Length: 395
Image (tube, rainbow, N blue to C red; front, side):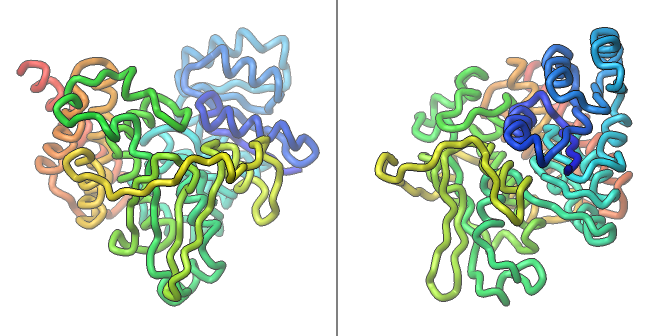
């Protein structure tokens, strides 16, 4: 039996992971489940999977959960606080860790799983955006294994040759990675209407069912920018070897182009259970619960080049990884604050990119020297972004 910890179990990725695990009770055992403060959903998951450990990063929520399940599940220990997320990732009988906590909050538990030598199923792109080199160095040092869960990176992983990570992309005959993007809900919205779009509209993704923060990131295409940075670290490459292409139908999840003119693509329904099952079963293939793709029913597949005026966040991310150092961490922190402010109706949609750009100009990038230094930079960038939000509200 393979022991699994699901970090961020109540979110969309976490729930999809549990759906796949439920299909294979003879193979996997859920050891730990974590959430932020969704007590009711985590309680239901605990009653179904009976984990050894349940964690709520909100301590008061953890106390409430403990009172609710203490008599029903005497063998499930409940812990609260952010440090308990690390505990869940490090448990000795956990073999695989699904890192599905959204945002910078997922960095420390994901890094803890790496340092414990686990197989990390990485759905938290921010861990690599913030601490790419430190993170990948820890993977090598501790003999951990990363399998990407983002549908695009999982597709790239499937299309790359086995030699690519050891020999490098060029030596393996790869000329470039083609990262697909749906374009989100505002792909054809007139530019002059974008300042007025609402959080509800931004969260109405045309092809994927995702959480609110990721949905907004998809609408601004910051999500694709973060994925660009993540791909550089995962596949040991640079932005000049990655092309972003709009593919609104979302059936082709990404492609790899080879020097001989071949292009390999991974296709499937826009359903996160497919990459989750791939990472859980790799190098084998296991059932995901996703129906087979009927090519005869797919609408004509279209591809476009992203518009820089429509999607400034994508280019801000590309500039950040090109700058290097702490710039990606600054970008991510400012974006998290700006997106939260938009969802709270404190700023307009187009102000998200403006705030990120301003914070990148305010806080200069520095060489990364330690994790503590990155966390300090993250805090500074968040404070600067909050000041920008308040300035926008005053104006």
